[in-house]
Image 1 (cartoon, rainbow, N blue to C red):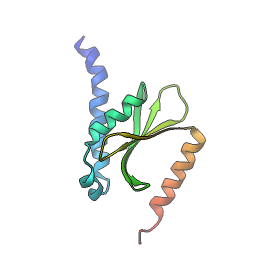
Image 2: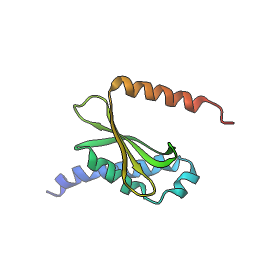
Image 3: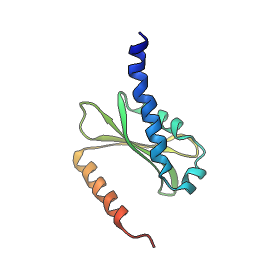
Image 4: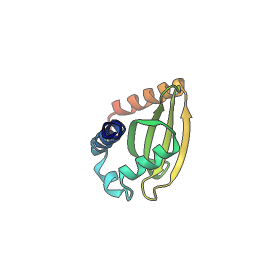
Length: 119
């Protein structure tokens, strides 16, 4: 029974550690500004998508709001669900499904954004 529970808990523990490492790469000013812990925001986002697994996360300012943005994959479902959680209040501010085509388009736009030199 213990092993059965550890098989479910281990991915969640490791996912939390990886998320913390990923957010550490975010802008330190944004991290300092966030009032909600990333682990709380992650739990809020995952509660919206049954059987979902976080593929990526980002702390960003979008449309003037500081948000945690999560791309959540569900096994057997194409595309991803994007859930945005307000980093100041902890509330869901957006939830959308992106099919494979939209997901590729967003990934391409993100890649171009990273290549641009910052002024």
